[in-house]
View 1 (cartoon, rainbow, N blue to C red):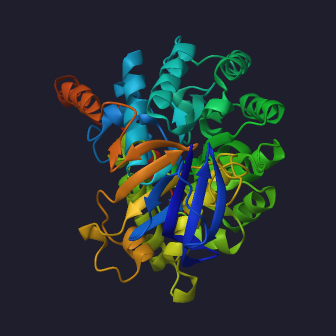
View 2 (view 1 turned 180 degrees about the vertical axis):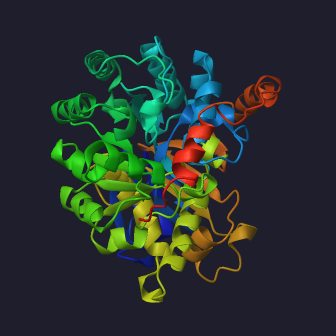
View 3 (view 1 turned 45 degrees about the vertical axis):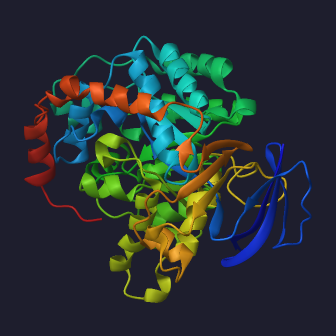
Length: 473
C-alpha cells in the first residue's frame, strides 16, 4: 500500500516547509519539495493543504492501570499519594487490558504514536498482567514499550528514616524478579509487531543494588530500554544522601546503570553534577510537568539540562497523578513552565524545540531513535496529520505556536503507526471507542465510592519532611 501526502506543512531543520511525503508499506519512502512527486493510479492520495504533518510524539512515562484512579487520589505529596495509589490499584486482569486501551487511545488523539508504560503488575500474576497489556496495545495498534515496575525492598524503605516505620512484608527477591523479567522478555518482547519489553526497576529508593545492576545486565543482554524513577521529590533526594552519602545519580552511574538506553523519569531534584553525569552517559530525562505540579514535587531543571546536552523528552505520567493522558497539555506546560526559572528569554524553550523533544527526543528515550521519531526516508511511518482548519487552530498566524501554546482540541485528523492507519478523520479505527467509554463509565460505582484518605505513614512524613531540619537543593 502506498500513500502520497501532497503539499503538507512539516517541520524541517527547525522551519516550516511544504513537502510531499510518500509512504510505502510500513516506511517513509520519500520526502520531497511540494508538488514534485508524481501521482500514481494505485496510490492513496491525501491533499495536505491546510494540514500539518509531524512524527508521532512519545509518551515517555506513564502507568496505564492508573486510568482507573483518575480523580480518585486527594491532593498529597508523592510519598503519601503513593500509599493511596497502592491501596486502590486495580486487581482484575481485564482492568489492565482496558487501562492499556484507554492510555493508547488518549495518546493517539493527542498526537502520540508510542507509549512507555512503566507498568504495575499484579503480584503472583505478573505474566498474565503483561499479557493483558500486550493484548490491549496490540488491539489499538500503538507502538508500546512495557517496563514492568519491580522492586525488592518494602514500601517503608522509600521514606527517609524509613527504618523507623512498621516494616511490611518484603517483595520478591532480586534473583526471583530478574528471573521473572527474563521470562517476560522471552515471552513478550516482539519488536516486529511494535511491542517492546523494557526493564523498569521502580527506583533506587525501593530497589537493592543487586536488582538495579541485574536489570542493567538484562538491558545489555537483550538491548532493552532501562527505565526508572529518579529523584522525583525532596524526600528521595534526602534518602539518597542517607543511604549512599552521594548523589543517587552518581550511585546509579557507579553501578553501571546509566547508558544511552537509560531513561529516567522526573529528575526534579537533580543538580549540576547529576546533569553532567546523565548527559555524558547519553541517558534521557523524561519531563512530566503536570504530575510534578499536581504532587508538589517541584520544577525539573529542564533549561539547564538542555543547555548541557542532556536529552529530554515528555511524559504524561499516570492518570492518578495527572488525571488525563494528553500529550499536547504536557508539551504546552513543559514549554512555558520554565520561563520563571531563567530571566534570559533567549534561553526559553520554543515550540520547535519542544516538538523535537516530544518526537526525536522521545524516540531516543525509549531506545527507538533508529526506527521512529523523525520524518525522513527509511524511518517507520509513525506520523500524525493535524487539521489546521479546526477553529482552535485559527487564525493561522503560526501553526506550531497554536499547536503547542494554544488549546487545540480534536485537531488530530489521521495517525499512522508503522504505516497502518490507526486514526482517520479523528476517529480510532481499530477498536470500538464507545465500548471503552462504556467500560470506564461502569466503574463509577466501584471506584467513585472509595474514600481515599491520609495514610498511617503521614505522621512520620510530616515529622521528617516538614517539621524536621530544612533542606535546600
